[in-house]
Length: 293
Image (cartoon, rainbow, N blue to C red):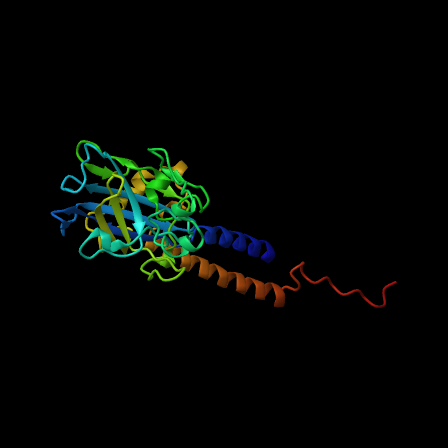
């Protein structure tokens, strides 16, 4: 009986451990390029959730005030994660976050590691990342696309008449940014990430909007006023919810407590089985009478 209970508790703990991975929420208030600089007024948000082996994105940015891109000529918008924060201009953000050295011409490592590896157009290297418009999931192994090349992985946005660049649903990316790289300095082979940048569709990839990521909560109100993370639940159906069911912070803490208490119970049962009930293989058999035939 004790051994059966021990197996049941162990099985439950294994299942609980599989769903107890922490999720990290980030959000950026996005400002647009206007009047030769960057407006200080938020024109939307870019939200990101990073879990175990995936990330998810949702965003909405009003680009109608942009004055350095002719959307009638260039109606598509690219968007990437960049390595630095912006202060006065989107050009402050440096290059694309590229820890795997996929090496587009805009990689943060273009002039350093990519050049040393001959992964530049001048050396004949061709960056092959591209996605069909409307793609909402990316699962190709790292190497084809820079980790930070989100529109390369998920498709560029075609602006509607309202000029609001928005995700059609929550996008899923199975080659996510590394959570531990958030806010790290980009030095040598270490690549940090800090901001989101939107680009015009012109040949130069003119930077038209940007925002700095901040670590936040599921509700998002701590640092990103335009972000309502209820969208995570609203946009994820049961048959496409591959990220542990949007476990809330309170739910995660409760699950961790259950797991810890469960392991304590396992230890108690183990001690009881070993020292009070005999070997784990079963209760000790009665000793044979030495006088019996």
